[in-house]
Image (cartoon, rainbow, N blue to C red; front, side):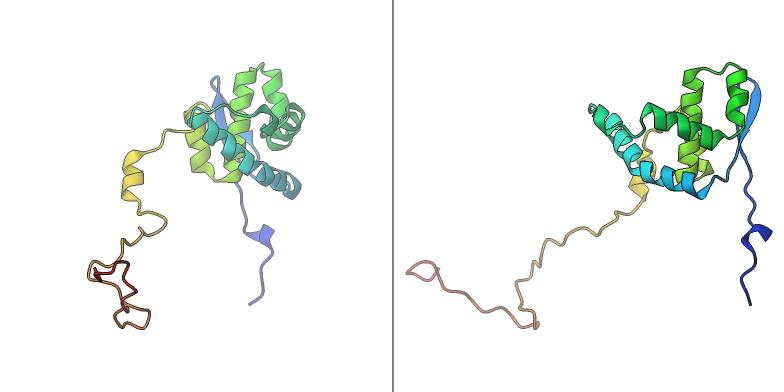
Length: 168
C-alpha cells in the first residue's frame, strides 16, 4: 500500500468567530512558515500566562510578541478576514482577543481556543475537581521500608561501627 496524497483527504474547516452579530471565518490551515513561527512563541506565551496567573509582574523585555511581530502575525493568521474586520471598525480589544484565540487554536486545538474566546482572552481558572481526579505525573516517593534495611542483594545489611564505647 502506498501513501495517498495528503491533499486527497486532509480537510481543515475554518475557525468561525462571532463578533458583534457577524461571523468571521479564519483559515484553519496556515503556511508552514507561519506555523513554525507560532510554535516558537508558544513557550513564551506559556511563561507570560503563568506569571499573570501567579500575580507576578511580567518582564516587558520577555514579551512574547513585539508590536511589529503581533501585527504581522495577526495579518498572517487572519488572511483576508483582517481587512474585513478593519473595515467593520473592530476595536483593538476585539483584535487582541482574535489574535489570542487564533494563537491558541494553532498551538493546541479548537476546544482550547473556544475556552480562551469564551473567557474573553483570559486563561480559564484551573478546575480543581479535574486536577484532583488526575493521577500525579510522577509516582510519590517511597518513604522507605518500615521493616528494616536490606542490601541490594536482598540480604540484611551489615551493622556499621558503633559510635559509643558502650556499643549502643
